[in-house]
Amino acid sequence: MTAQTPLIGALLLEPLALWAAARHAPPDAAVVVTEGGRVRHADARAQQAGVQPGMRVSGALSRLPTLHAVPHSGPANAAAWSEAMQALPAFSPHLEVLAAGHALLTLTAPAGAQLATALGGRVGLAPTRELALLAALSAPTGQAVTVPSGEDAVFRAALPLGTLGGVGLSAPLQERLGWLGLRWVGDLLRWSRAQQAAFLGPEYAALRPYLHGANSGGVGSARPDATVTASLTFDGPLFEPHDLEGALAELAHTLLTALGTRRPARVTVAARVAGLTLSATREPKEDLRTPPPLRRALLSALHDTDAARYGIEGLEVTLGGLERVAVQGDLWGRAQARDAASRAEGRFPGSMRRVRWLDVFSLAPGNRYEWVRMADGQPGTPPPARTPVLAPSPAALQPEFRT
Image 1 (spheres, helix red, strand yellow):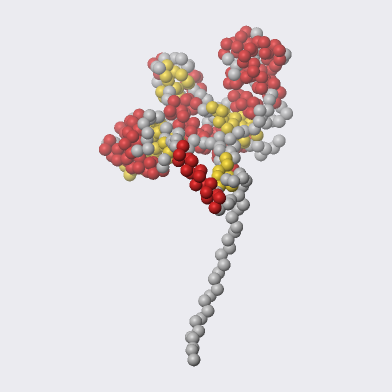
Image 2: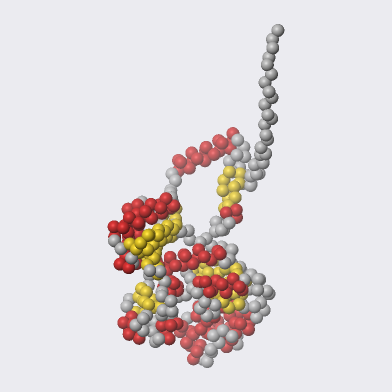
């Protein structure tokens, strides 16, 4: 296996809320995610200062006054993951999303290291999906771990037992295994399969592929979330609501033109302030395909950023979760269209075509669908190539004489 051999890569951005908060945090700042007045997630710098999950925010700030605390926001996490997915096709032609913050790709070892550095996540590379996930769980943040072919048993046995917590081992069972003196996955593998199944109970079915190896296939296909983006850069910082409302109205007009008939489910507003970016995401319940609701959603998201008092130098708006509204066709309309197609086929045999879907999630348009004849469902023959023929130059007119 060489460095350019493609392997299955697992990307982990977890906890996703902490990763999303760290993207816009000041450099070298300790970051925590809060919820309900308590710390929900804390990064390595915060934990080194004594901040632990479950601690009250006031207590965490007393231990580390420079702590960067970000409230937990589901829409913001979804927007951050959607933005990350837009960058993944640049590293791999194949992409399969397991969950928010978890994805499978096909990567070479250098590309895996670049991906881990670019996104600040954990990447594992291995010949199988299961080993790739275990490698990613064992990787440090911002780095990639590669499992060479044929060394899966050695790699699996050397993993800490806590690694299995990311693939289905519950905390109570992990604690019970610790009471028995088990610290490594290799200690558990010394048991017989019957002993493992009896002790692990219902969790054994989920853990078995990771303990004993499996090959559940390659990387599937996924379609990245479609987005529409518009931005404005100002000559000077804007503070006044009147100026900002005019800028948002101009952005709304541009976005509506790009949307067409699609309906967005998520609005993200990013404001550039003194070299920093303050962003907020909302999931409005209104239909945003008309100017008034879209302007209200943009104003609400801009208000959440609290950036106007610092002077906004530029705005960028992203609409995500685009979908086309389904329309229920009436029975008579479908019958009329079918009859019209049948009459056209009877008059011009082989002229009517229909779409046959091949892979709806393919990123290549040529692999997504094909046109077939309506009569027999077979691909139609390509139209004959037409070669332009130059017309002969008109002969000079000769005078006509009559006698």
